[in-house]
Length: 224
Image (tube, rainbow, N blue to C red; front, side, top):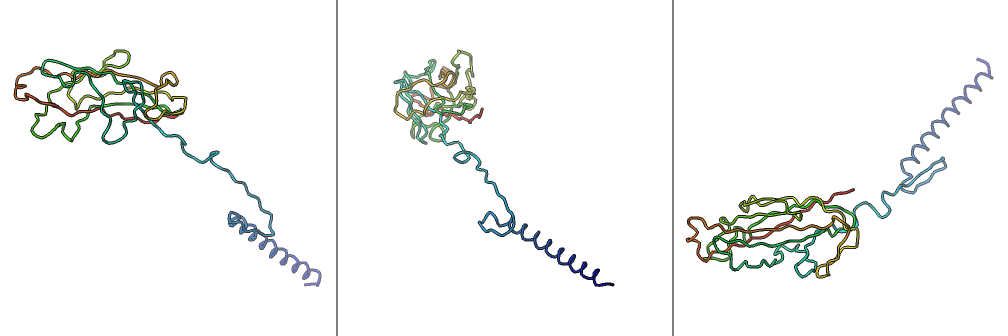
């Protein structure tokens, strides 16, 4: 082997060793660039922020009730809100009472699928010890805002229905106690609830009876 060939092979080995070292430095810079460590190798980076202010709905998803006096009621506490039903204290067998309930989507940008159901308070609907519980005897009917039946003459266990989708309010949310002001069209609704006490055989055993019942709403957010 002549000297020229030997020098060429030495140069080639040195070149290969340098190329391998350069590849390792570049790979190392790629792995640790996120921690602010630099090297002599050429590097690049790009940062992509997901969302202008982070990810997640910044508002509060909220369904509120419109009280008969036109004020907003949240009714979110476990104790609920005492909704006055005209004639409730005079409900006896063979009669019925009716109340209109209005509610609205208090969320500015999200729609809401809303359902409601009749529930028994105090666990079983008993008002107080020693007072006959008439909850199992009562029958419930409801109509939507258009007058179409939601359910008719059912027991409390069967008294549930969907109120459909309420559109986003499109305005700033209202706080409890504020006067209700309408939002976007379709963001509010109402329904009529009728509670009947049938004059059926055996009701005489429930003389002086009462029932502790309530309405529970459930809403699920709907994104555009």
